[in-house]
Length: 408
Image (cartoon, rainbow, N blue to C red):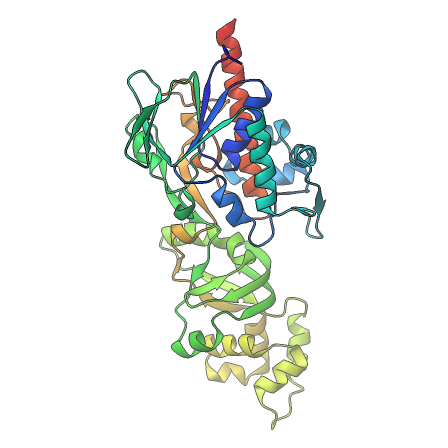
């Protein structure tokens, strides 16, 4: 390795660590730099609610989750697929399983366990980690320049550089998007960051907010335009959170940006037909309170009932056909999405036209990018992590290809 080309990876998240894995396996000396004091901070955040590593669905459906970049990700998934990811984890000693939803999780390991094993494996291969070094750009000799926490500036000679600095969500983990100024100064086109997989804001009444913030709404169907998602939702002080909300958040965000009204339609009893609900409502006795009747006949609890009262005129609640339609199609006006800093992920970043098929920047030869620095987005469900892993793997292969060409 003494005379091997040297590669610097900037960013110690899943994309950067996967790139370091590929490069070190090929026998290259690799130095990994990160502005924070430890590795994989956003990876650890992803593991808080159960580490959804990838998904088991068909590759064509999987690739379609990346929207406008489906064809590019289909190619990437052909190089490093969900099965390849599971096989690599197995080699690390981490077994995985497919849940009932098709999502893939580790069997007996946490995100912290996986990260610890991964870092130890890379260290044994000679990968060197340098923490609390913030990337400052490039020197006149095209070497990466860093600013240490103590104020020292360090130029690091490198034959190739891989940037994996993340997007702009969860900035406390290190992905604060500050790198955009450096690349924009090099005329690299960058699409502004926007929140993705985020909650939405609803102007609740003070009464509803004070009583039901933190309460769940179970087994809903949500619709926005022609798109829909199912699952559980949580009422918050600001609005709504939960997996189906995150799935629809990009649609909601895009409509809001076009100044279009955005009603989020909730089906509070998706397992019952409109006709069935209306028939049940017509059986209500006059003396029985509506809240008690809905709880017993339709299993609509206090939060769902109060949500109906929040958005339905009083006269609608006493009319069985109209009330049935409200239960099946309750319109919730959305004011905005939650801020970018709170989003699970971000849209925006380096435009794909700025990189070649190996993810090297056209305007900075020898500099490759991976992960959420690129302008792509995907829903939760394993697609975000798989995208980070696959782009990191692919960019590292691009580095190897370039270095091999330079030797011949």
